[in-house]
Amino acid sequence: MTGKGEPCQVCSTSERTSYHFGTTTCMACASFFRRTVAFGIRFLCKSNNNCSISPKARFFCRSCRFDKCVNVGMNKSQVQQKRDLKNAPKYIMESRNLGVHEVVRGYTTTRHAALPSSNSTSSVESTPLSSPVDSTADPSPSEFSIILNTHPDDLLQYYVKQVEMSIVQKQLCLVQNTLLVNSADELRDLSDVLNDLSMESCMNCPGVDILRQEDIEVLLKTFHFANVWLDAVWAFSRHCESICDSTFEDNEPLYQFINQVKSTLGSSLFQLKLNIYEFAALKAFCVWKLGYHDSTIAIKIMAEDQYIGISSALRKYYKESTSMSDLEIAARIAEITLQIVPATTIYQDMIRFYQHKGISI
Image (cartoon, rainbow, N blue to C red; front, side, top):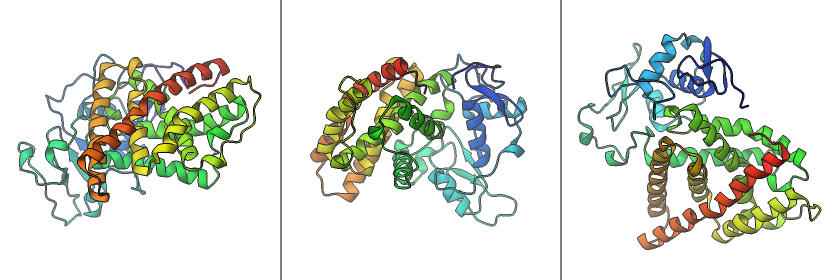
């Protein structure tokens, strides 16, 4: 889905626009509006509540973007409230558990400042917006990412949940392992099924809500690669013997590509024996680094925040769950990070192969 339509009434892009919640918007603005309303979030502007929401802006102010959504006619009543909070950020779940239905997020907050609803009797602790250093929240305030609007632990957990969803799909036989497809048509059908998951993963990913549509177009491709190919390679690395017997003609491009995937990244992951947290970290690294050369400055800035946050959370996981030394932790994270190199080659070859076979992302 890459066609152009009427301009988005919020950010003015013409990419992937259609009618959402009462007016014409792009997919990105519609997803941002839905998530903000469904989770009951109120953002605070760091400036004068008049920030530019246009394709020229490197990042969108969340507060001003939401205000513009409302001003152009997007209707809150058309958004279904989230009943299942398993994919919600930790601060949302904590607020709901306390009976709080509106959560204020500011550019200088280190903890959520939650406002009780009129029928709530819970007393909710909040940190003054002007004094973020006074917070005693764990993790430390210095690790909170303003751009991503989350803490490292929550960031890594987001990607872990995406991997868990993929595992469940395969266990329920809803999708097959990509390395087992027997033709380009089967790959096309599988890609179409997983494109919906890729889009959902992308649009709900921390930080994406302030990116422009052109940036999201790049990320949709890397999320697709992560869900279609990386997940398959990780399964290959865990159950190598069970999925390496696909039969193709020697000169079949699909056969050659799948063999390339198995013999390079698949072989490396088989040696590394990544657990779900490590693979989730690798998946996140790849999502944000593979499209680096096609990226804007905005994505490059966010990619750096993603890498710092994921690495911090992974380091904490090792310290709390293993007996590894600091040197061993650093070496392990370096080994995981190095897998971006073969993944980049495979990603670029995937783009060329898809173009040759007419497979869209």
